Picture 1 (cartoon, chains in turn cyan, orange):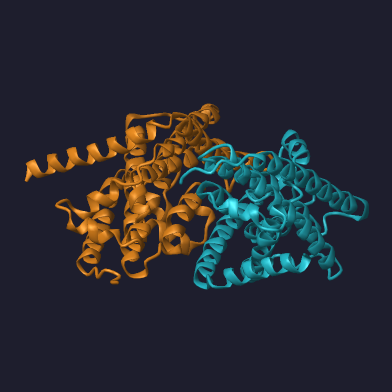
Picture 2 (cartoon, rainbow over the protein chains, first blue to last red):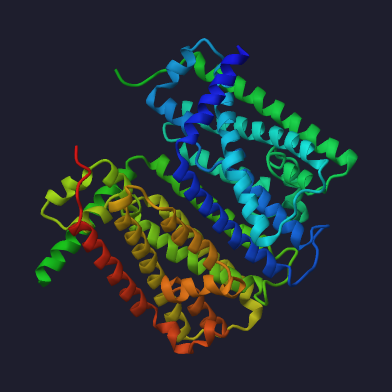
Length: 264
Length: 274
């Protein structure tokens, strides 16, 4: 069965390979936005040298890292599952002799691998060239970072599936998906480094599942987490992953107990 | 000639009214849509404000001043999104081959394209912009800002002009679709990227980017320059103060350029063929 899911992921990866020019264009937009963000950060840091152990270079590296991760973890406007529900195609997916949840997960993970290689890396490379951002806190951090990134990515995939499941109950769930993804991106550190948050907002962010999706991996990458706090962050990521997975499976079961497809 | 103009305006209003009526049929969806869009744009504005929690100033600009800039850009961009929605969506029309059908009708192509995709949810961003403006005024209450009728005029002209320039950029992007069949990222960079960029003081950016948005795609004339005038700050590149009122003329000129390019595109249009 595992072989099947690997093939699903591989097909999804290969399907993304076709959109070379769209990816290049998207890459340009990513880099442009990062330049705007970086300009704002550079201007802000004129007033103060460090914010909570983050100096200018840290903040720049953080921003480029999270922007590089966005297409991997929380791509804006992901409504693939919602569309299959709306058109009724979800019935064929549910009739397949494989697990519905695992199928969608492997599909999205295949895509995530593509975007890691062809969007994430080039974006961060551009940051290296233009702003000389950090190359990770030492070579030993890379395997730990990749583990944290994997946890974050899977959590992001599960969260996106959760948002799309709303389509089982609402005909136009697109606004829910857009809102959910935006909130997730905000609390994952895509808009601005979480370390800038005022105390009350930081506490709120700590209690939500989103910080583990991108903020956690970014902090690991910059070496901001020492031994015990590193372990704590990874355990928190794992915990939220499990919680969200249970939620998604529960909701799928409730939704598919009785699926009414419109149309003849 | 005047009759033709009134006929066109009436047709435009009629087509818009049709879509408004259609969207009002699903009231819950509409309210949810507007609310979501408001919250999403409010979140972007909140980011702008949160920057000032750890940092006191942004290259000398205080929170209220940056908030004012962000609000002005939001309102202008919101208006452009509202009225330029159809133009933004032009790639779909071209890709599906519907443009041939549009050309066969006895109404100008641009009129037909620009009256599609009129989405009421865009009012979410406009409302956010207006609320942000109120918030900015609250933050500026200690700044001893003297509001003269001239300043208010400069701002109003600026907002309308930036909306027109944004729509013109969308039109340029749509014309490029005649050849590329797909909206180029360049259009997205100039509209969405431009909006993001202009929400912050122009002086924080590289000289090249400043020149782009002042002299080539003159969005700064509708946003940054009127706000500089209102706040009593110097204009970029040592431009004279009275240029804060020149935004409508500049916007009109830019719009005419975009229109000319569109007409050129329509004239040279060859359908995708079967």
